[in-house]
Length: 352
Image (cartoon, rainbow, N blue to C red; front, side, top):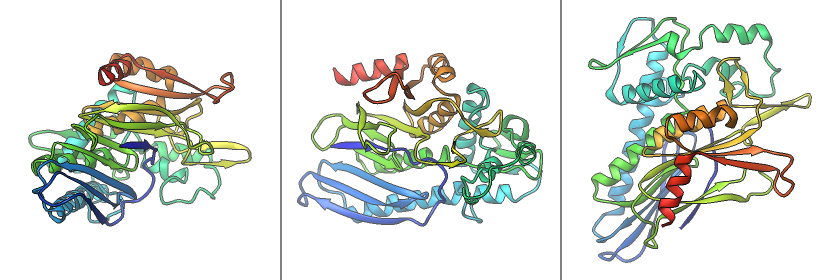
């Protein structure tokens, strides 16, 4: 099976889950189960190989449904009753949070520190200001004063404090908000994978909005074949194909979610140090990791950094990363590519 990976990055609301199931094969024989639907403001798909044919597809569907609803109930910024929304609407006192939310914030803190602050879950005010949240991108480009005001309540390491055992989270300014769209999708993918394993499934792929995790082998008995899309909407071509097994994968790109004003292109990827969209030439970053959550967060962080700054960070943290950079000197495609050592090693081992 070939899956083309396309970024769907972090700006659409979490919607109610809608599931459709297709069953291929015969009962009591090995079956391929496919589930598709909507969650987290995008589409998801699950492909799983039931080796014995004993599983009830409706039971699997219900388990996936329940898992994603639970993730939304904790992580959705668009559900006013979610755990993160209640925290955002609260005061500055430390509040007890669920182990699930604590797990996500803990990883966010690690990536924030390792990316020189470019991964930041308090960027919500800037995301809204630039029109990549609820605000329409038809509005005027923000003024310097508006950006400065938003920056006053942005800064993950300065404005958020978390403790573990007990798990608590505290904001130092009542205006601070936690925005999880750059990491919660990956977390949801990992949770669905855990659910499938609990049902006895070992060969599957879980994908939400282009980010995914694989386990075991595909329906043909080989590693899952995942395509990295060239960041050119007109071509719809695949830049490279990655054979993947037992690993998460996420891609962040700047070429789908952007707007133009007066001939200037504004990406939805915000530089946390300036409060403005990034201006470098890196168009796409793909990250492989043991978890989809880590791949999701790092893809955003490294796209914010760009290839020039991001590759040394990837090497220092032993990250498997593939950069696609706009390059006018490459006449055939307009892009050059760059891979970290770990990415090259993983591809070599998967192809053996």
